[in-house]
Length: 236
Image (cartoon, rainbow, N blue to C red; front, side, top):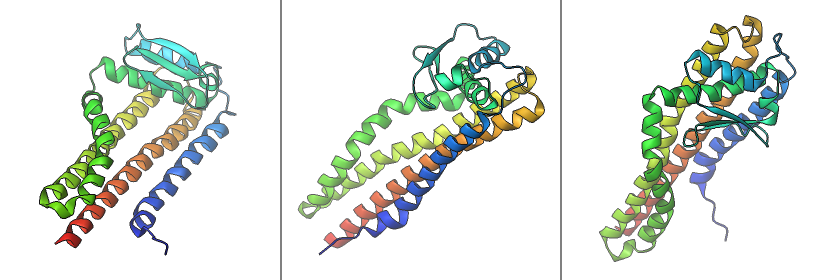
């Protein structure tokens, strides 16, 4: 007899489909505006450097790395790492992504509050994500031995909840980095107003992936909570 997990189908599956669509949209949007060449023919690396300089930041390195849209800012090394297509690209897409990563560097330099919060909770989030499922399984399997094990299962759910908080704090961080990027691109005259729309659409598509990540994490959290609550009710 087959077991169908309706909570996964109803809660998690739609969020996963949304995440897959968002990821696909980023790729197609980036590919589309990779063909829109900037009139100044400035590369992504040059645009990132211009954004940093406009904010009085001169100690951040910019490196080229392999991969597709593997761009990120590493605060520990104080390095912006840009994929080849972004680092050397002269399109509105490349400039938008590069400026976004420069926006993260500016956030760290200016001690932007959500970034400080996200950095602070990374260690406990990592611990929580590793302990959550084992605690939930132990709590559910041994709940017949006493109420204490039900509490252990709920502790596992709470531990997973830290991942939801992390994703929630990530949203304003990413949106703000894009906002800083677009403002700097316009103020520095890196792109024309018409070209700026290309960068804006690429960054808007990228922002959806973070919304989708939050949706998936929250739905997984809700599913785990319902599983534990259902198990606790059956034991009574």
